[in-house]
Image 1: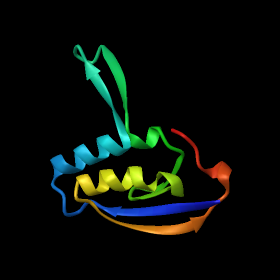
Image 2: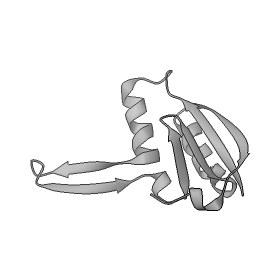
Image 3: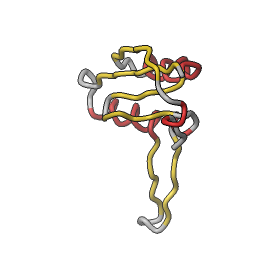
Length: 94
């Protein structure tokens, strides 16, 4: 199956911008009432099948590339996209 490998670089962003980007892409856990309740806030990758190779490398289906690119462009993140071939069962929804 044809897939896309996305390698991104967050070094040009400050800490606040990195947090906003990571929350939108990967999601986060939200605590309320003095940590009595926890809520899982889902990110973009929770909606699409993906495989995270390392901290700055993601493999997704080629059909979903536009969704991720829009977030990267919105946050001014530098990224490179490569076409690769991968077995379909390797991609999973989080």
